[in-house]
Image (cartoon, rainbow, N blue to C red; front, side):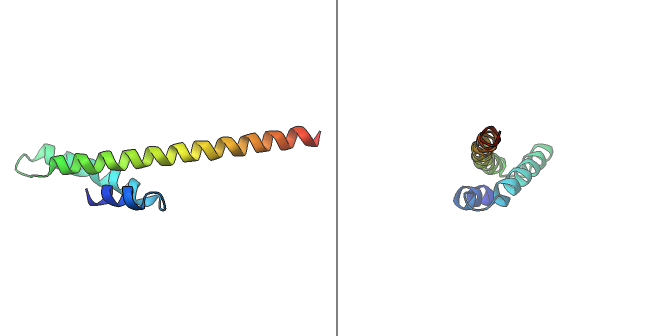
Length: 81
């Protein structure tokens, strides 16, 4: 959950916290599912959700700027002919 919180707070600046939140969240949910004596499955799921939400934001940003780059390259190629 800590990495999930860091991904929401610092995910707009750095790409690493959301990725780590997803990895650690999946490991924690898996561990909690295998061993019922462990607690914290809800916090693991919360961190996992926060990581995926922040990662979805990164994907949208990459697609947006990638689309702008493709439009710019296409316009540049059309103008050069």
